[in-house]
Image (cartoon, rainbow, N blue to C red; front, side, top):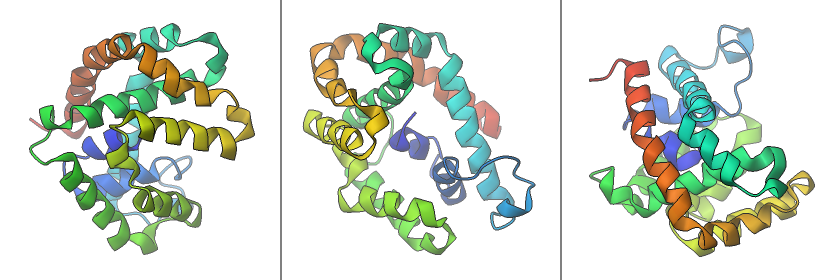
Length: 198
């Protein structure tokens, strides 16, 4: 899953929001001294991030969705699928949360700015860009998705071809949404179980 889903699955707990972001940056064992800067609640968020990624990789709907994606996405099919699923979560956010998507994104950005000093150097550029260009809110629009995929293609030569993911989503949106809807409730339940929520 991509950023919006990770933040949504933090269940409005600030340490989990931070940990879910840091999951892309905190490497290896969490008891390693390099991770001592994070308290136990944030480490739980990092572990939650890893649980989300693992569950997504192994769920039948996620596997079927990746199989459906065109072969030219190669080993980056998972990246494309994660972004598609954020698109559907953003587009239908009112079905999943009492806050509007706009208010939710404002809340998340506030947490990231409030705890900026805790973020590693290599996360700051990403967070600044996320806030400046309002990634989370713009995931709901086809134009926002196209902009994201085009930007990824420009910044990362190894992702050449990923700019085709926007047109592919537009052409087969109903199909990919069916995979999202078959997957996301199970992911929510898995995260609640992981966190021992009712």
